[in-house]
Length: 353
View (cartoon, rainbow, N blue to C red):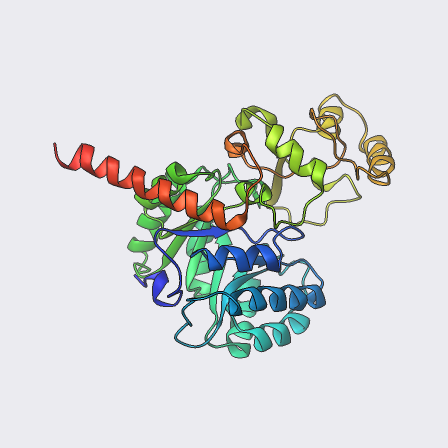
C-alpha cells in the first residue's frame, strides 16, 4: 500500500484533511490546513476561473510559510475537488495543468464510468497529480478501483454532511468491509481515506483503526475562520446539538431552488430546517419553493437559528461536537494532538494487558 506521506512530504501523521466542500472550501482554508501539516482542499463547482483564483491564494500562503517541504514532483501542496456531473472537463484541464495540485479529488458523476475518463484526461494534464475518487459503498469502490485506477479511494460514510451516496453505511463498517473487498479483488495496494462523522481526534483515531490512512473533516471546518460561509449558517452549526436527530439525509434539500440536478444515487445531509419540516408535513414542493425563494432573497439568505431557516445548512451528524469558531490551523493541530493521545492511550491500555 502506498504511503500517502510519500507524496505529501510536508504533512504530519495522522493525516488530517478538510473536505473539498464546493462553495465553502476556499484557497485561504486549503493553504492554512496545509501549512499546519494537513492536506488542504479547495472545493469547486463549475467556475474554473474561481478555482484558479483560489489556487493562487493557497499558493501564496504556502510560499510564504517557512519549512513547507516540496513534493517529489514539485506539485502544489494542496488538493482540488471537482464535480464531474456539473464541471466541464475541457475547462478544468488547463487549470489543473497550470497549478499541478498534489491531489485531484473527483466526486459525483452522471455515470460511474465517467470517473475513468476524467482520471485519464487529468493525468495527461498533470502526471504528478494523484487522482482520488470519493465513493460511498463497497460495490462502487470495487468498480471505481478497476475502471478509474485511482491513487486513493475516499470512503464517505453516511454520517457525512452535504452530498453523498444515498445508499451507504457509517465508516465503522464501510471502511473495513471495503478494505477486505479490495484486498480479495486484487487491490491490496489501494489507499483509502475516510470521511463522514469525523469531527475530533477520537474520530480520526477510529478511522485509522478501521484501516484508513487519513481522515477528512467537513463540518468541523465549517466552523473555521477561513471558510466561505454566511455568518448565520455558521452560527447555526455552532448552535446545533444531537446531530443524529437535528440532521437528516434527504433529496428535498436539492429540490428547494428547482428540480434536483444531482444524479439519482446521491442525496444530502442538512440540519432539519423548516423547509424539510414543511415537506415532512405534506406541504407541496411548489409552495416550499416559493417560501424558499422569498427567504433567500433577504439579507439572511434563508438561514436562521433554531432550525427555522429555509435554506439547507449542510452538516454531518457530528455537528454537536463543534463548539466554537477557530483558525483552521488550530483545528488541524488540536485534532492531530488528540488523535495521537487517543491512539497512544488505547495502545498502552490494551496492548500491555
